[in-house]
Image (cartoon, rainbow over all chains, first blue to last red; front, side, top):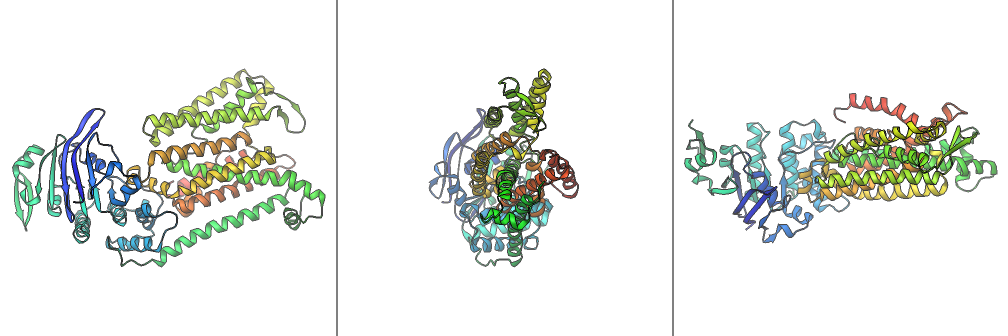
Amino acid sequence: MILDVQGLGFSYNSHPVLDGVTFQVKPGELTAILGPNGVGKTTLLKCINAIHSPSGGAVLVEGRNVLRMRPKDIALNIGYVAQRSETARFTVFDAVLMGRKPRITWRVSNEDLKITESALRRLGLDKLALRFIDQLSGGELQKVAVARALVQEPRLLLLDEPTSSLDLKNQMDILRMIRRVVDEHRIGAVMTMHDLNTALRFAHRFLFLRQGKIHAAGRVSSVTPDMVHEVYGLPVEVCTVQGHPVVVPLA
Amino acid sequence: MHFADGVIPEEYRRYTSLKAGFVAALLVALAGCLVVSISLGAADIPLLDVARSLLGLSESQRFDIIIWNIRLPQALASIAAGAGLAVAGVVMQSILRNPLGAPITLGISHAAAFGAAFSVMVLGSGVMASSNVGAVTITSPVMTTGSAFVFTVLTSGLIVLVSRARGATPEAMVLTGVALNALFTAGTMFLQFFADDMQLAAMVFWTFGDTARASWSELGLIAGVTVVASAYFLMNGWNYNAMDAGDETAKGLGVRVERVRIVGMLVASLLTAVIISFLGIIGFVGLVVPHMVRWLIGSDHRFLLPASILGGGVLLLVADTAARLMLAPHVLPVSVLTAFTGAPVFIALIIKGKRI
């Protein structure tokens, strides 16, 4: 088991946001966290990564309690792609190389440079290697953030809306890449997402959050119209197109 | 994960060597400027004699006295102060995620001015006429400096305390700094309003940053603090890089963001406090040098920090030498010159650079 979340709770100013969230992620599994705006999807990711301190429960990554780990140890095990990343005058190469930070003590090794180059090439960023990131488009910047998390070589990848600012082709490219990394390297991944159809196409499992609790969870093939209706308050039909479940709103 | 098929891109290697070369060039420029600066002045000293005297091989006692008692301490004070103010500026701008992060915009400089004015007026470190330094002098520089230092430390402490209560966010730090800036400006004006002519002159005189004020022992202190603080900043270069990508990304990379921000702010403030308390207010170096260097070689702190340290030293040394020579026999306060040249440069950078 890569990730084991046990009865996780989180309160913001004594207002409960998450309550008793329990789920597991196995090696080679991509889980999509779904639910309406403000339901606590991002908060859940931040609790897993110990950016937020949960008010109860435990988060185990490969059996180790994240809350008892030093920040550097967490970074060696968990890669995190934040919803928003800031720009500054860094080259694309340096911005991705930063993902090696948990492993760099003082000098950058040749291995660090090679891994960074390889990740850039896989995400099609190699042509932009020496471009400053404050000159990139939103989509390119998003790819940089994903590449940075990949060069961390984590066992668990957390992605907060990884495709929010991408066009259709870039969405497909980046999720295909993430899915391939998960499949090939048997790591675990958890992503939050608003686009149900994209999520259901690339994830192995889904998890619907509603009022801070897990409302439904399972393999993506088991999504039902009722689940979506109950979570989003909207009647839908779930069809199958080319073997993938597709949610179509009825109203 | 297997990214084993990577190769080290030659282009990137060239790019980093170029940046390393820039830092090395600044070091050479600094050494060159130091010798030239020492040779120039009311009595011109040939460059060869400057070199001889610095190496302890001098044959002229007169040159030795001018160099070791007057020009060298002033030149070294300029270098140390320029380096310290510039590196403090880099760190403040980075950890506050604000291009305006600098001692002068965060109230630290104005707190020093208030401290000095307070000392002149209330503690009576007083004034008297003196013919040799432009008619005004401060009778107790130790008390004035001490008072300025206390107020700068109080200010930085307050900025850190208030921002801690708000989760050490950059916004909280900047806004507290702006509020304190206004407070101390008003406080200084209040004191100036009730000051007599001589006290007023002393207060204003103190605020003119002047690198000639430092004696060898004070210079040692300024240089020591600059070296220790710079070493701390250099060690945290990767942390500042990560924080430039956003707090959450930095946390995901294992950076203790709040701690790095608070300690960085504290060290940068103390460094500035020491420099300003001894030399007076020297504006714009801490603001302009980091932006110039960033514009030239980017924000990677592995290069930005050393380049700003050296660049700050070069800039203030050149400005100080120019200030000594421009209106000779009068000596212009270097702070006037840095602001005069700094402001247009800054505006040019805003227009040219896509993003400051």
